[in-house]
Image (cartoon, rainbow, N blue to C red; front, top):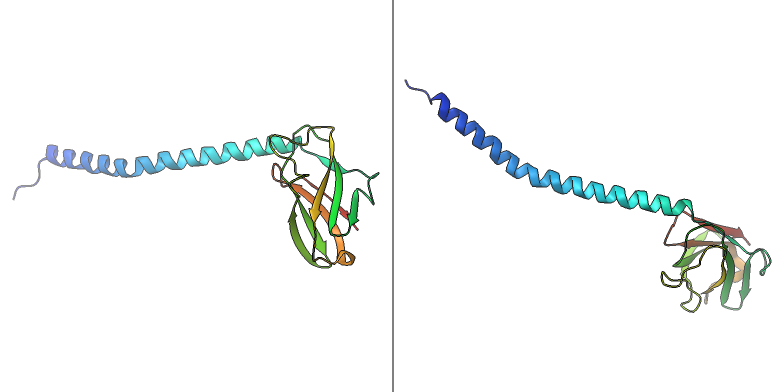
Length: 153
């Protein structure tokens, strides 16, 4: 009986390894690129959020919050070093948490942010909600959602 020659078996082995590498290589490159981008985004977000801070103005309304009819307003001051924008409210009514967008007239945007040491009044329409059941007002922002301020009513 004759076997496959050593040279032919070596060539077949190289072809198999090369074929497997051609299938796995692009997948590995894509995976490493994706992980690198995610790490970069996370790191950038953490760096920006280290300088993000804001607080209620205690001289406005009651602890920085004022309710007038269907409009709830809050005055906040940027006490950090980062521009902040896209704020939203998290209101707790008894044991129910609801989210409300800031009115477009008072919303801060990326092109018109709340700059360090500036203050602003944010308003939200709470039509249909029982103000007497309001227990907590929390203001968050989309730049650094982990940074927020809240006050119990």
